[in-house]
Length: 439
Ligand code: PLP
Image (cartoon, rainbow, N blue to C red; front, side, top):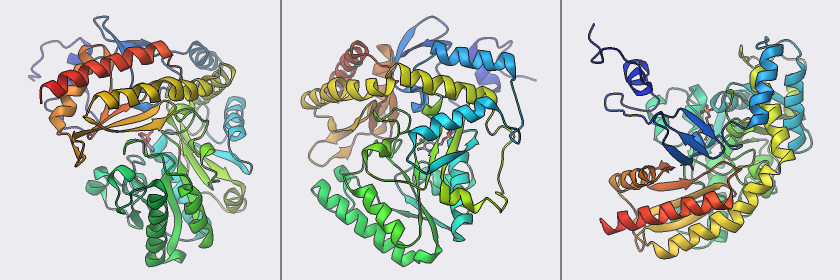
């Protein structure tokens, strides 16, 4: 059989011969090879180094190869590499305690999953069984994962080819830069977005709605930090009708916004919290649902109809324990907060002053987005080719960027230093200058 490659042996050759990729037409893919990493850097198989300002898929919050996490995994591997979810296991219990200690009072149980999608899947299942209702309301500007209900709860284009599950309704959330509510201030945007949600709830029939599912800070959709009061307003609408509030902290949680949970900055108490990514920086796949006592009590005498062979896998749990202990001991969340407010934010705002292509700078901590616009007056997004040129310009200069639609997301690990931020800002500046000159 002809494969077109006589004897594949490099990472790229083997990839092209045998690996089928996510969210892609397979034919013309030329993925970049990454062989190793340390802290905020990764390198390819020629030894070329890149500053990782993507944190891969915005998940390597603690940086690459943190020795305490690697050590925790290795120690656990020597003790016990796998255990069925039905057994008690000390590492799992410690991981659950470390997570719930960070959560609001009363959210003191964790159901572990393999990642973010199945965390949302199970949170929706819990909400539906707890309330006896079927519908889940979520935002158009959202991504909640790639499985059955999670992909249909997702608001972006990835929902549409998967729309087989029913009972999902979408609504618009605040996004002042491209307001769906003709608003011109954060206060107006907040009030009108809440009014819109209240109307959607009314029209869908409150007694049929199990949950409102929201990313605390929509991430892939553009780092859309909600205006003050929005999430508290959503909580109030939910409470009025006995609807549960699920906050998806898969991307925003565990340090990304400069807080342990993004909702710590929003005076809101969710009923269910979903997490993954930053909880152990993806060193071993893990996710989960943090469950309020009232919801958990529903399943005291009633079987919870869900489970996974690898729920609470000991290597993933060891990585959680190692990660959360190191993050606390080394002040990594605080680092994200200060580097964000003192270096990334001011640096990006200075870039925006110099580059008309930057329509807006948004974010906090190590969670930022630059809206790239073709025209600052109309705010028309730049064409995909322009984003491609920005991406290529960054890679050529040794920076691994994260781009989504017309945006450059600035999402380094939480351990990023002011010097690394300065290097990245210089790269962005050069690239934007070059791309603007070519337009
Ligand atoms: N929720 C949010 C907010 C996400 O950003 C993602 C992934 O990017 C997911 C859920 C899905 O997580 P996973 O890919 O681990 O299933």
